[in-house]
Structure formats: C-alpha cells, structure tokens
Image (cartoon, rainbow, N blue to C red; front, side):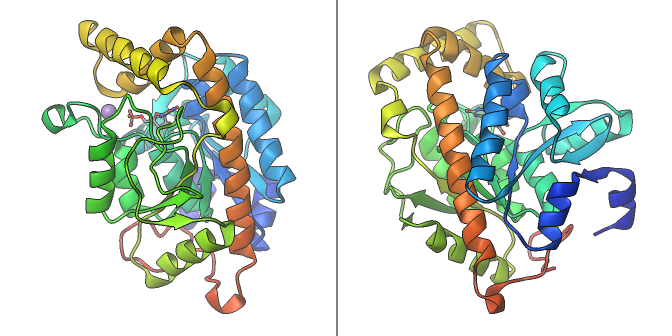
Length: 328
Ligand code: PSU
Ligand code: MN
C-alpha cells in the first residue's frame, strides 16, 4: 500500500489491522445507512448490533466512515454515536466526494461506493450492507444512476445486500450490472430480492446455497484479475418481509413527493427512504434492521469461508489495487 496514504489519510483500528495481517476474516460495514438511512437511536442500535452479529459469526467488524478528514476503518463506540447522533450534519460521501472531505478535514458517511473504495484500500474483501444504489426510475433520461454500480464494476469487494429498493428501476439496475461485468449471486434464491420483499420477480442466473460456494466464486474472480466486485443478494428473512402491495403503494407516494418537491442529485435516495418510512408507518424500519443484521451474518460466514480456502487459492493482501485489471 502507498505509504503516503497510510500515513496521512488511513486509520485502521488495531483489532482490524491484526486480523488483516493474520488473514483472519474481516467484514466491512458502511456508514451512510447510519447517518442517512435510519433515524436516531435505531441507527446507532443497528450499527452496534451489526458489529456484534459479525463478531458472533467469527469475523472482525470494520465499520467505515470519514472522521476529521481521515479514512477510518473500524470505529469505536463513541465514533458510532457521533455519526448516529449527527444526522443531518454528516455529509453523504460517494467516490467523487472522498478527496474533498479529506482535504477539508470534515466528517462524512460513506455510501456503498465509497465504503468499497476504503475497504479495498485496507485490504478487506467482504462488505455487508442493506441495499445498493441503482438506476433510478427515469434514469434513462435523467442519467441518475448510482455511483455504486460503477464502483461494483471496478473495485474488488464483495457486497452482501438485500438487493435494491423498488424505488429504483430494478430491471435496468440488473442490466447495468450485467453490462459492467458484475457477478450477481442469489444467496439461496433464484430471484433478485427487492429489499423489503424477497422477490422482485427478476430471475438471477447464479444461485449459491452456501457461503463456501460464494467464497470460491469471489476467490476465483480475484485470481483471474479481472477486477470489480460481486453482489451477493440475500433476501430479507421471511418473518421480517413486508406486504408487497403496501410497499408498492408507499413507493408510489414517495416517488410522487420527490417529483412534486423537485428533489434531485444525491438527496434523492435519502429523501425517498425517509418518505417510505413515513408511509409504511415505521414498519419499513423494522424490516430494514432485520435485513441488515442478516446480511452481516451472511457476510461474516462468507469472510470465514474465504479465510478457510486452501492456501493455493489464497492471494496476498491486495492493498490499493483499485483499477480494473490490476493484480496485486
Ligand atoms: N439504499 C438503501 N439504504 C441506504 C442506501 C441505499 O436501501 O442507506 C444508501 C447507501 O449508502 C447507498 C446510497 O450506497 O444510499 C446510494 O445513494 P445514491 O443513490 O445517491 O448513489
Ligand atoms: Mn443519484
């Protein structure tokens, strides 16, 4: 890894650094979900519970955020509280925003795209979250396509999620991932999950029923050196899933609000999430918490399986290999 980067901008918590050095399993967790995806104090409780879930499953959690202009890999309890309680004042940072936040020394929450970049810099391969961004409805005209999708195409991190919310154009999101060469795996499902519901109706070609099988696909993709990530789509646990009819109605209302209020750019996703929470009467929040924790569990199982792969399929830590085709 670039010494300048490590010295000036990257701060890896000791327990995470030790685990990485020993090739023990580590799971990255994102912070936009804490600062912009859920209200306080449920955001803080969920962040803590996700870390505890990863630990219980035998891996070390590394929640990622920007604090005081430093990329922080692994946060303390106070750090989590600062991100969770600062809701509103904490910037939402994607790929383009990272250098700006570091230059100005501010705090910021990392999106899926920015968390993938930071995880790759630290040498972390597995990342668990709630949902990825995607092609927004009308995206073929507005060009509102989440930077998460291009990040998945270029940065070698496996992202465990419950698909993407149906506030997005899910068929075009899957088409875009296919065009950009991202491997999408259904975890014990043949269908792309739609976040609050297990089935978007869209078929996936790849299904894995075990963490070991997912780990082999991730490792072989790394070995091929083709760059880019893998999406592991883990459906919301059945007991926590919402009624599809109620979700569709809430989404229509949220999209209507965004259109009439002229919400654009990076504000769109947080705006839609909070309207959705309003229109589902808080039930969306409970579902969101349940799926994040299940993704943390599955992410840890995959990280454990990766660490257990035979030595001949083990590569050295990859450091800052961010470009497509660069093999560490
Ligand atoms: N989808 C969710 N919850 C979230 C997000 C997406 O269900 O919290 C967040 C993630 O951090 C994701 C980001 O990376 O929103 C995508 O934002 P945008 O569409 O502006 O790229
Ligand atoms: Mn956008």
